[in-house]
Length: 195
Image (cartoon, rainbow, N blue to C red; front, side, top):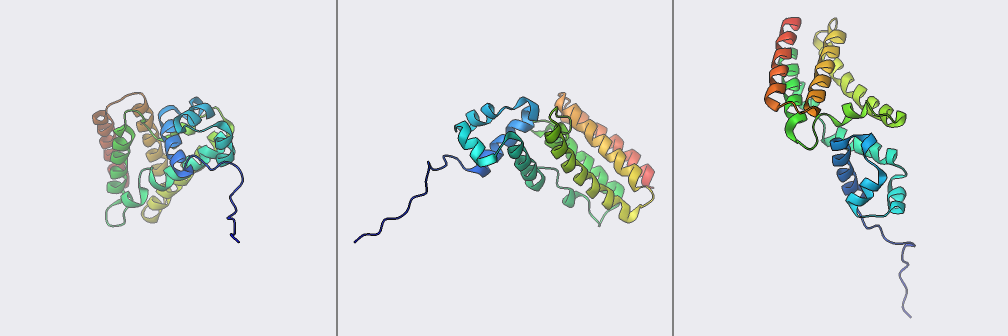
């Protein structure tokens, strides 16, 4: 007597959710949350709508996964740049230069995915992006506060403002050369402010 192997019910998934998240990340980065539809994602993945909803629950569910993926391995590497073996001003200057390079590296997906999401017309997507952005700002604030506690709030706000500007200008098509020049000027201001 042969024993039959039980098969899972339903059709097997025709896609890998991790790959789907990577594809969606490219779409959201290039066009923004508001301008990417579920149909855009399903078309890019070659899947049907029920498969999409079964895997992610909603467009927002997918977007949350994209933000987690981006924060883990797609965003500017704060831990590598904010180093204890050099001055705070040097580290922040390196951060701004990396932001300028990163935001302009891919002409199809300029700027910062999270910063772009902070301007979404969808309140829940905007909140998700703002939470991720606030977490990155907190890392920068904590780094500055270890050596310059009295200036940490002002300096971290300045760095965040410059990074927002670099991202916005990259999305507007400003060249990497021009973004790097802005980052260098901001670095001079940081060096002066932090003495």
